[in-house]
Image (tube, one colour):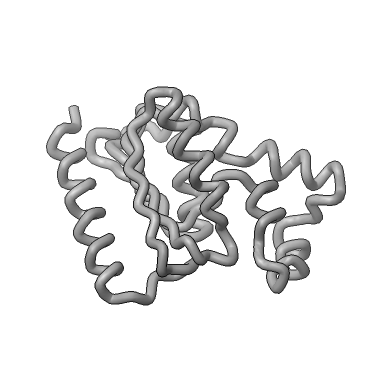
Length: 159
């Protein structure tokens, strides 16, 4: 933890790789933040890279490693937020697009289930007509209103 960090005044959030970092931090440091918001973030690197669209496989190998290589696979598994899903104690809002070629909804479904099974508080917003980046204005407005309400609720109830 960061000396002087007042968890009652800090939320963590991000999209895509920032969503992965949100998932990683909120699980690695339970009880530190008011809340977290993960937008299209990775929860399980191995599953994510296995299920990515075929057009992304070559660039993924160069960027993240080769999941067919045992050492790369073990490393990616070790840094997956799924490992800490049961430790999550801070409220978490997760947004995904059902048509996301990069982050599959099966991975997200499993992550949300694991958090809830362990008693964690998670709001799961899955948009059936969105991909990795939201493009439908109605969905964008809907999500941003929900995100603002989520954060407002949890900052009001923070210690």
